[in-house]
Image (cartoon, rainbow, N blue to C red; front, side, top):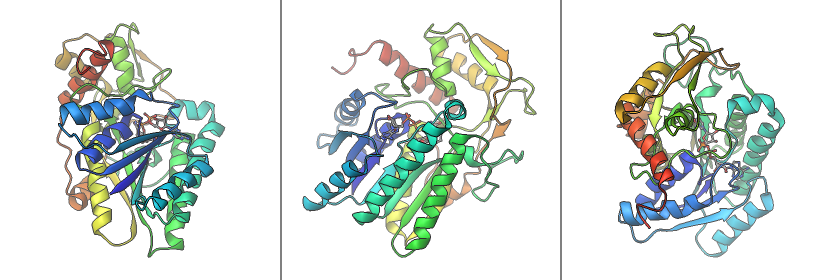
Length: 353
Ligand code: NAD
């Protein structure tokens, strides 16, 4: 298939591109690089060439913002006139920090909603009607359910989550307008961490990191003195927040499985959780990171953060039953791979150049 991947240079997008290219799909990435390096495109190629031994890599990177509808139209038009229109879009592009979204909601609404609308308008215009959207577990309410099902209450508690929910609503409306035409999968991710086993790419946000893993590795690298744990009084096994961490390559493979599922089935819109179904507390994650990598992570407890929840774990049975997919990699593997990618970053240019 020929695939347009928005935000494909980012953390999850870049790992997914590896899975897509390994399955011989043709990939065009559009990314503004507001939170990623343009170098990632070359890193993906290197992994395919030297790690997975793929010589015919069909990957192109376009620098651009998906809010630029004219640019998107040009991309779709070019693909069409070349006789190879896009078969589907994987839509990762967007801003993703819960904290930032509380401080700058307008930026989040502008980037996430305007970007998605302009993308969907362009897809509609050029008759590309299969899309996999990066949704999030943050759309679920904090109603102390043990496991979140796709049918659980939707009640996002921060602007970021509300933008994700709104995009799902837009996609629902779009589907309802032409149910015989659209194939839509809203993949609701839980907490992706880890990195590709090569260590060549990983989670490398620009600016101040917000996600837990880059904050832990910052301490491991000696760039922070300690790791802050937000709250030790949550109603969880050890008082720290519990999350469902999933290896980013398992998540990437989930996209491939969803793409195959949409291809092989009739038009539909479907919501699917991608997680492991296992809950890990912050303290357990730190201990696992320390044991797996033999590095001490000093930590300190601080106040709970606004917009956080005690426990967020996926019921992943729909993904397992429907997609022929299983998360395979352990928490230990996530910690080892995630740290390897940081070390590779520290010793850049030693491994593959
Ligand atoms: P990321 O920031 O690493 O990747 C997003 C990419 O999109 C970046 O490369 C960024 O430069 C690009 N981008 C942002 N706005 C853009 C725009 N307007 N036009 C073009 N490119 C733009 O984030 P990620 O962790 O890879 O997340 C990917 C998607 O998954 C996001 O939509 C995010 O909301 C969603 N998600 C992430 C997580 C997580 O924990 N990482 C969890 C649930 C959902």
